[in-house]
Amino acid sequence: MKLVTPCLRQRLHTALPILCLTALATTVHAAPTIDLSGVTDVMKSLQTAALLIGAILALISLVFAIFQFVGGNIFRGVTGVFGVLLGAGIIGWGPAWIASLTGQNVGN
Image (tube, rainbow, N blue to C red; front, side, top):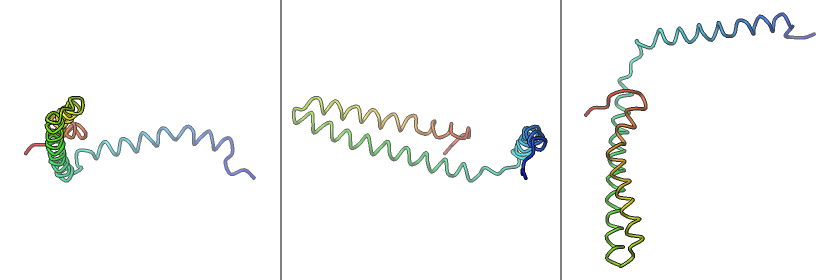
């Protein structure tokens, strides 16, 4: 005995898009009532973390680059300067990247 007959399979195949559309419509209808205040707090924490990581990266890379330049190793000094630029990029663009994840404005 088959559990799924061809007739039942055809009806499920026809009903599946309608059920998915109904579930999506219910979710979209409930979207304006969802409280996102917790998301904003998390995004502010992530923004602070990005600023901190960028500052630490820039500071350590700057110290590394200075010691390499003073020691005469120009190539490693230039590598350290790229680390400083990466840290500055994280500080500058990190909060915007984080805010774009949810589309929320992450203000101070």
